[in-house]
Length: 292
Image (cartoon, rainbow, N blue to C red; front, top):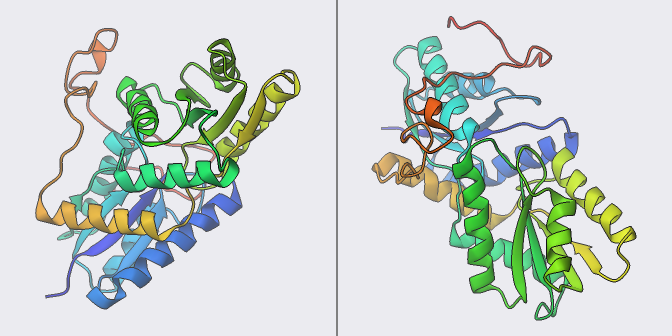
């Protein structure tokens, strides 16, 4: 029997270089799985082509009736928890008989942690006097923001650095300037800003821009910005690990602090809320109706 196909679900970006990096990464994963005769396709939930529905359609056209979907995201926020599962449910209506197993996001995996350390060493060979500011995407989901804080602590435990702080580029505080202010207040005179992003794009560019602006007005602090994780074999291997995990049934989602499962103080109205995909009227790569 043909093994289940792999569907890589990306967020999407208005930055063409970022979208192309995702497409190149999908090709990298496909080459690594070719020997196992596993079909691979990647699609976005918004902003850039190909949309998720086209990726699913291409896999179905190749004769795949079973697939495992892996959200290509570093943290489990609204997209991984709600939008992608809802979109996959819609695809099952569109393609009767399609069976979908859903994997978990990449998360604070040792492979991601190793890549972050590698990106640090590329801009600061001697990290012993450097304070790292890990900058995540930012979310309205406290659980997702806590994942960034967790990765910051893991980095502090495993990298030869003076310390690690964290910040967010949107939707959550502290922002990049406030995060740099915190590093300076703690006595840092050498800071490496480390974007916690998979590929280049609008938000990582904004991280670098804000770090540069802050550095220009604080000449007493040396500020360098590291690169994003990028299209790498290490990430490809992690996606394949998530694929195998989804099919084996060993999916350990971070549900203990999920606002949709527990009444977290300040977020009580979210508990048990139905999940539906959000739509973007300006985005013409998607259909906005709900029937198959």
